[in-house]
Length: 78
Image (tube, rainbow, N blue to C red; front, side):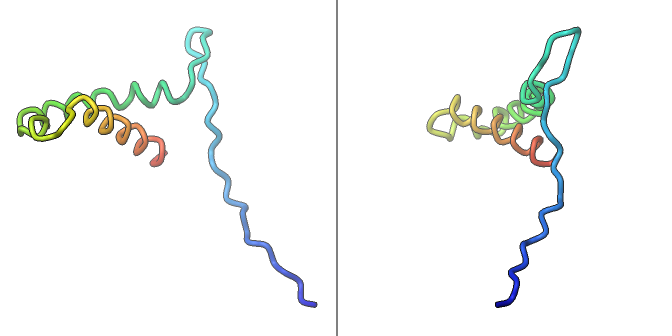
């Protein structure tokens, strides 16, 4: 009976751990969310001036989805 080879899973991913800021432990998601706020504000101004927010069914839900997508993209690219 031939031996079955297992796939090589030696690729290591960085472990998300807490950051200590002034002795307070902060989860990495909070820092990623804070990092995307300026980009979100800029994107929100562009969406408002282009009239996109008037065309969506629920503007607040749409803005939340955009902000969540930005945070997700930041996490996936790191």
